[in-house]
Length: 172
Image (cartoon, rainbow, N blue to C red; front, side, top):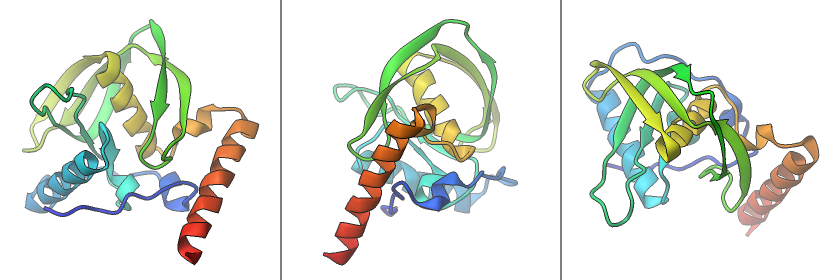
């Protein structure tokens, strides 16, 4: 397994819409394993393929707590088929927007169809943090960041600060 480089905003590659995976093969599984290792090392609870520069409908998620065994989920070509009417607001962050957080409302629960690690069709009912994490990562597959839900002023401020930090890092 390998640690992949996580792209940070405002990199244009994060705005690319991902494409469906045609075949779940050993290359896809190896890439998913690399994504999972990258997510754990970051550390994070979710990672989409586009965040590591691959515009495919692939997501890794693990919302287990530190005192629990890891419980990774591999979501290939995920599609939300139902949203709950109940909306919850939660403070979200993102590995592609390090050190920035915002309170965002999202449906509290979802029902999701996807292919698993072996390419088998699955359906999952997720709620709470798992639901939120999946919705956040699925936004990435559509080229959307959590800051896109914020006001233009707040979004612009965050993206300018990230761009400045990236330029300083490059020149150092």
